Image (cartoon, rainbow, N blue to C red; front, side, top):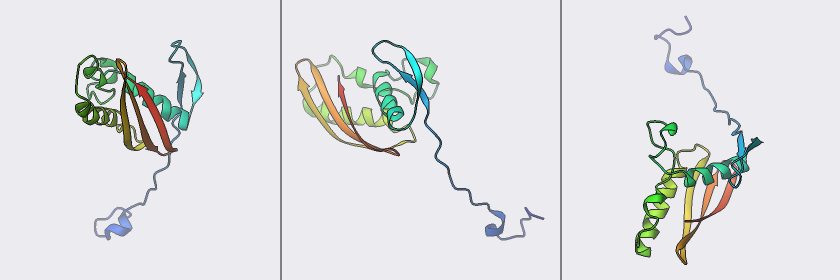
Length: 138
């Protein structure tokens, strides 16, 4: 019998190698709200990063009961917080928002600076597609 418990585990187990699946998604034009053709690879990852950071976490029930999707940057906006606290919280909330995607391996090297009433945040993301440099104005 092929599945006999009397056989050693090596003979009962089947080795499966994971295959990288395409990350195709619809292209979103963030300026007009239009949905375009399909994108894949680096452009799909960049779109995910931008959309995950722009989406307020816990606000939209469409993203499910797990509340994993989205970012909590909204909680920091408009508050007169010291830069030391922002240097700790912004990397944490952005990293949490991005690490739910299997294509993202690491988020690091944050540079945060105040520009008038806004904050300029740049960081690096290691992905299956390579290393990306991202910039966000909050």
